[in-house]
Image 1 (cartoon, rainbow, N blue to C red):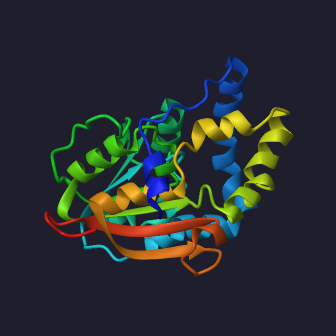
Image 2: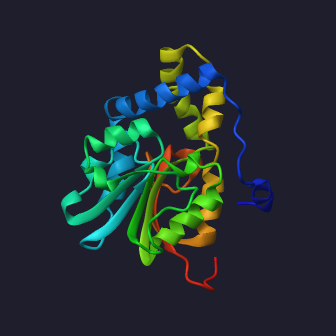
Length: 243
């Protein structure tokens, strides 16, 4: 990553303002995408959830999944062996989550804001295709760090946003689905949703955390330009540890 790239990384992001019609289409599309992804892009979805679920964790851990959507990840987790909380900011999605998961473990909230849990409450935090959406990513990562135990792990999957393969792949997946169902241009919707690139996310991650494991899809080579998505396990960086 060159110095020129880092100098362009600024937050909070200011995504394009959507028209009322675009806002309505965006919300309907988000639900449609969550519903159709497992069937239409099964291999990608298996990586999205399977990578995180396959990583070892300590028994009886307290886990928080942020941006849980409508609960697509729940079936991949061993819920009986952990205290598994889910947080989602869309009220409609929270209602769907409560159909699949105990209501006491479902929270409506925004990770940009301070949450009610105590410092270090969670042994593990999960975020699957969430970090690319967060307009003030430094603030959100600070809250994730606060909620995570000093020995805890943060497991996440992100798109290789800004990379060649991901840009081309979106043309035949998300963009095609949106245009087919809503007959509108996808450009503003995409810019409004994916506000952070792969390089920006990993720049911030490596400032606060240490990467202990990673995997890329569909190729195993760790180059974001050649892959669609990537998964990481990180832990808090020790005070004074070098980058």
